[in-house]
Length: 123
Image 1 (cartoon, rainbow, N blue to C red):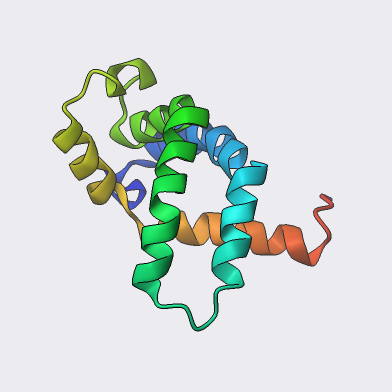
Image 2 (cartoon, rainbow, N blue to C red):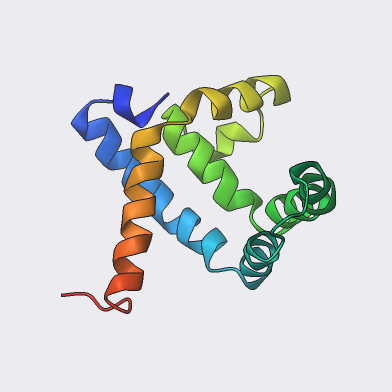
């Protein structure tokens, strides 16, 4: 379910559940290295980047952050993370595609940008 289709109470609960796992993934040194590699690959065809980084990203996500990914999917589907592991794989992929939401992406993009502007300090 998209965050923009949720009630305020549902969206609040989902945001609480996904904030920690997203932070865990984004703070991971392997993830930061992959992001740096993408940022420094100017002029490299996208297909070559995907072919090079996709296996690393899948291994990274599923080996190091499976619980985080399940929590994110569960939060957006409004189910416990434990149920995600028992879902059919095609259903899980569809749920992830259906959950993509510009509002959610914009929220985390703006939060990250705000953290960079003030040096990460909070008021």
